[in-house]
Amino acid sequence: MEANQNRTVPCPVSKLERFPLGMPYPQQIQYVANLLGREPLIGATFALDYTGCGRPVADQFQRAGLRPQKVLITAGNEVTTHSGDTHHVPKSFLVSGQESRMHSGELKIAAELTESPALKEELRDFGRKVSESGRVTYNARAGAHDDLILAICIALFMATNKPTVHQEELRI
Image (cartoon, rainbow, N blue to C red; front, side, top):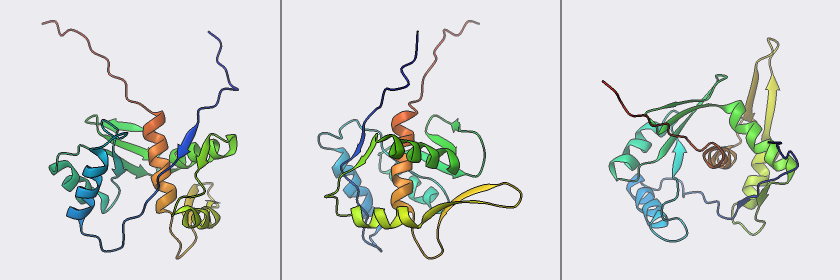
């Protein structure tokens, strides 16, 4: 079978929202539960950043029964999955997926989004740096944010890296 390299997969971003600073976690959990409880999101995959302070937050979402897919952003070179719901993903992998879809025209950000200006600002401030040793890092400039960019990167990762399950009969 021949692969069609000219094929594009639309990745529209039609909702992008930031919680107000200081919003208590129980309110965030309830808000997300309400979103996931109505169409078109019933049965949708819910993912969140599991890096740093994301771990205890993910635990709270888990205890509330929301079963998030957890993405731990690493500096490594390999994507690994643990326990079926925790993904260790190099930041370079996340960012390159987002960049390639932006450049191909697959990633479309709705201009009318409230957070559109903030996202544009983040994209301007986000860059790649190569150290003298050749190590590549991706970060916002000092004092700037990259949370909207990483939210989109995580969503793209989950949408394009569906886990596969292999099942065999256990013979003893």
